[in-house]
Image (tube, rainbow, N blue to C red; front, side, top):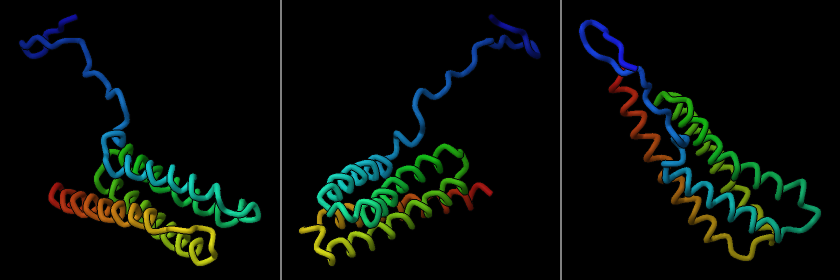
Length: 140
C-alpha cells in the first residue's frame, strides 16, 4: 500500500523489527555466557554441603553478569546501558572474591583459568562502560 503524504509517496510497510536482541551481538555478553558455563562446571565438583552456600552464590553472581549486560542493552539508552554494565562489573568482582574463597578452602584445584576469564571480561566491561559514558556525554 502506498500513501501520498505532502506530495511524496510513502510505503505503508513498516521497518522490520530486529530479529534478535541487541545483546546477542555483544562480545562481552558472549564472554560472560562462557564464564557462566565454566563456573557451573567448576562448582559441580564442590562438596555437597556447599550446594546452598558458596556453589549457589557463585552461580548467581556468574548468571548476574550476562543478565545485566542483556538488560542494559535492551533498555535502549546509553545511560541505562552504562548503569547495568556497572552492575555486571560489580557481580564480576563478587565472583572474583568467591573464586578466591573457593580456592582457599580447597574446593578448586586451579582457579587461574577462571580468574583469567574474569580479568579479560572485566577489561572488556570497563572499555564498554568508558566508551558509552563518553558517547552519552557527547549526545547530551
